[in-house]
Length: 149
Image (cartoon, rainbow, N blue to C red; front, side, top):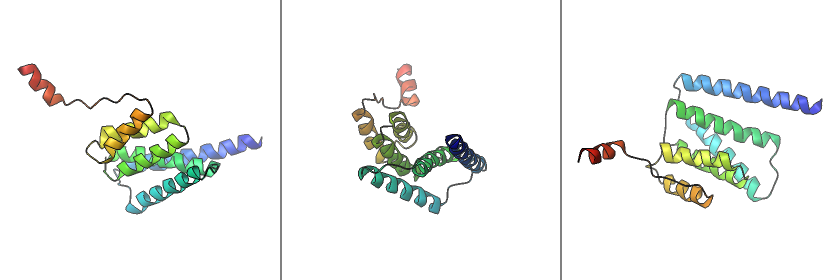
């Protein structure tokens, strides 16, 4: 019964967080600098705990999930370059926690949306280190020129 209650509360928390973030994304609102800084601080805190070999609490896991939801929702409304470092830091936390699928998703988001930043080569290196094949994004205009020759 106790586990069910905790599960229910966690579900309610995540559902409300998703609803709030989706509504902000629909409005096209940009994440405030304070919110970006808070996410960065939270990721740094979680990274320190992982390096210290400390266990993450359920609250820590909720924080990490909430950050990923906020980042993904922000990408729906605008691909602001200040999101790239947050994706990279979140990917590193996921990788350290051996959550490979989530780490790959974050690294690929950097490659797809922030390929012109300094973090793209780092994301590529991390993916290769994880054994993920990385292909360079194709440039459609170059392909069209090649076909016309």
